[in-house]
Length: 80
Image 1 (tube, helix red, strand yellow):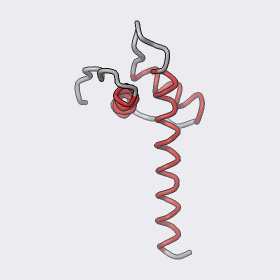
Image 2: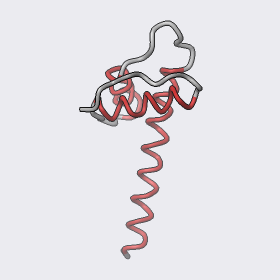
Image 3: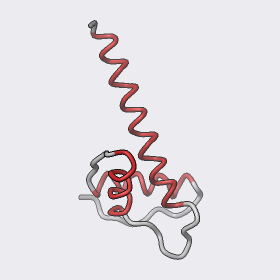
Image 4: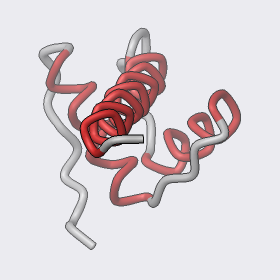
């Protein structure tokens, strides 16, 4: 296998992973106005739906991206 195909495969996998994790964040953001989702919920749902393990800091980044994408204020979560 050539390097080009390996890189394309890695890029495709990274894009798929990103899309799945954004979908998880969106799923938790939509319809929740009173009690915002937590990074722990994002991490748990990502594993439950897609068997993807992520840290809480990565989950917080996806959660904030989902919130901002929906025109809401991001959570003030300190960087780890």
